[in-house]
Image (cartoon, rainbow, N blue to C red; front, side, top):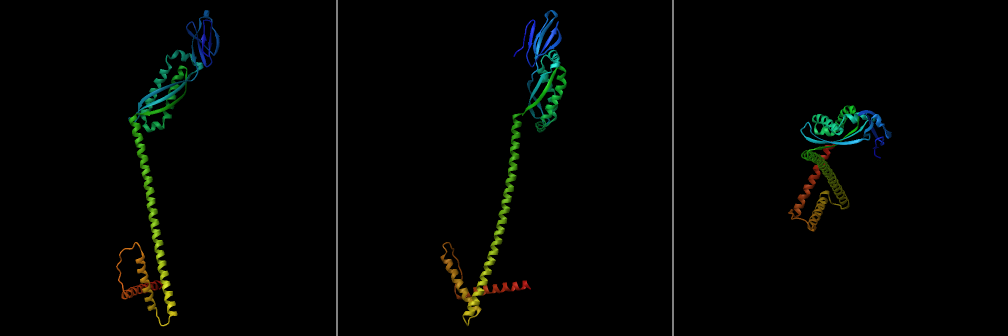
Length: 292
């Protein structure tokens, strides 16, 4: 609904306030509704102000402490104070320009004392400082500053590119550290697994040799008891010859064997048997010395 006025009456819309003059001087405020004026007494409706919240967007270009040029986009929300509408009507010709000038002044006084990172972190402090200054100044002219929003901070394009590259480099460095730690853990686990496998392999070989020794001992004792006139040495020679021929047979049946040169003949078998017996005797002697 608009505001209408004629020579004898005027209508002030909701969320508005009228300025009534008498003989060219301010006389009174006209609240929303229909008002009658006495032209013979010099009354007239000089103008109407809206008391709704208005928004003014201000773009400020300034420099930070670390010499980075930035653009700040501020949104100032203000309204006319009903009780002081006459001050707003008579004192300021262009309130938007006045607000913009104070925003420029306060912002360019605060931002140069901050680094770019601090500006992003403390943009609320900048908005609060601008709000305090505008409330103090514009209140005298009948305007109330409702809110100031620091909508955006826009650095120079080259600075934004550099910041993105720095961020990407830091993330790559962090990824490399995590990758290195993962590879380190993998190598440690692999080494631990190999050590455990070698240990278990050694335990298995030791048990295998112990089982072979126990089997040979039982075979020698059983053969000596069952066949009269034989001694342990003869039985050992017989077993060694049997094992010797079994080994040659296994080498011949293998499809992936390589050429192996081994001494062949009964005498050589006897030498091998002597070496095995000497090894068993030395092992038994070492075990006895340890037990003592």
